[in-house]
Image (cartoon, rainbow, N blue to C red; front, side):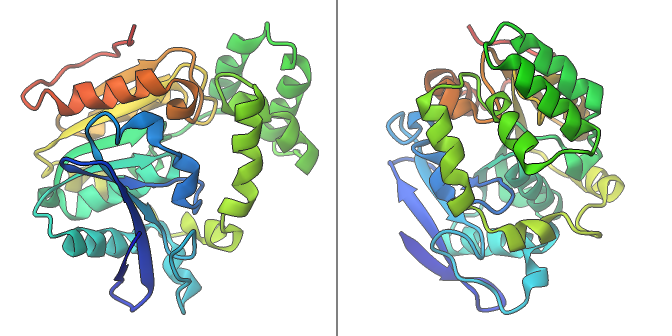
Length: 293
């Protein structure tokens, strides 16, 4: 574990594994500790130097004096502090879910500092992405043959209609993973302790996102973007992910079949292959929505 200081003096932590060119990884949640990434599908073993950041107030990072600094746009300064700490001129940047929104805001503010951008299962709120209730239910119906589907689907409908109870959120949990097995249940159960709820409530507070301004700023980004979607993801349906690609000058979208919101957990080999393939072809830009075999 490495520590470094944010501009406001908050002591932040990052976790490093593997060798090679650094790949900076920003957690989602929002505001969940890097630990939930696990080994990110074996990226370090596949030849990537994974640098996982604990955002302020999570994991091994300190809590700030000003809770308002948990807002997503203000966390951009912490990512820049990590880049400076690592001595990188340009970096490979990966963000998952809410962390992908932070990665997008960082790239918009510092387009010359990002070499490749990877956004994993992101609903693209930072660039104006919108997921409707029917988008979520349409994806959910793909799981209709699962034994847990009836109760989970009713709970998901309650969530989309704004009438959910805590019990509904728990009942809908199987939709978060491509396989609702013991490993997925354990991953879900660990989330409560890994997440800073106070910080999460501030993350997307009013003023955090200015989609039009972000899109305009991204026009200066000369690097490549991978938008990685998952077939069964009700949080960031593939259609929404693909639509957001137009906000990035050089973007490609890949959909991992059979995976949910945590694709490295559901399909580690497919996830690692997608990331490694993208990083291995610096001069290739493709359109459309390819599906990995």
